[in-house]
Image (cartoon, rainbow, N blue to C red; front, side):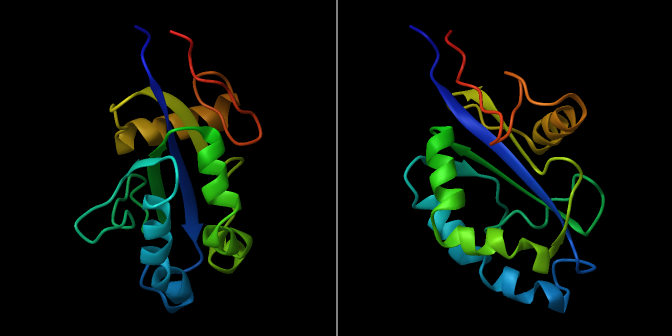
Amino acid sequence: MPNKYQLAQINIARMKGVNINDPIMKEFVDNLDKVNELAEHSEGFIWRLKDETNDATNFNPYNDEQVIINISVWKTVELLETFVYQTFHTDFLRRRKEWFHKFGKVSTAMWWISEGDYPTVQNAVELLDYLQKNGASQKVFDFKNKYAPPTS
């Protein structure tokens, strides 16, 4: 029987504030729980990286308090796209320049994982870096260059 695959994703942002508690970040932070709850109740959502505060803003893989990451797992690219581009989350996506600087060539990376095999922070960061350096491929891709799950 072939493996079933799920979509893992990381997105990353460099805050305009000195850290997540900077006043410039207040509206973004005030809505994090609402956006995270919306994600968790969205069709196709499977898992997201979070700590005891229920978010991922305390993870610091770049050793830089201005960089925040989000890692999640979804059933399909299409269901992730629906959440990103057709929900309350979209309002914050449109306004991201209020809170964030541009982060390199690409700020979102996606890749297929075996069902139930959740990504580590280190693995996700490495794949984002790989995408930035090498472009989209079956290994790791973005919304503009999507790849279907492996067939085996």
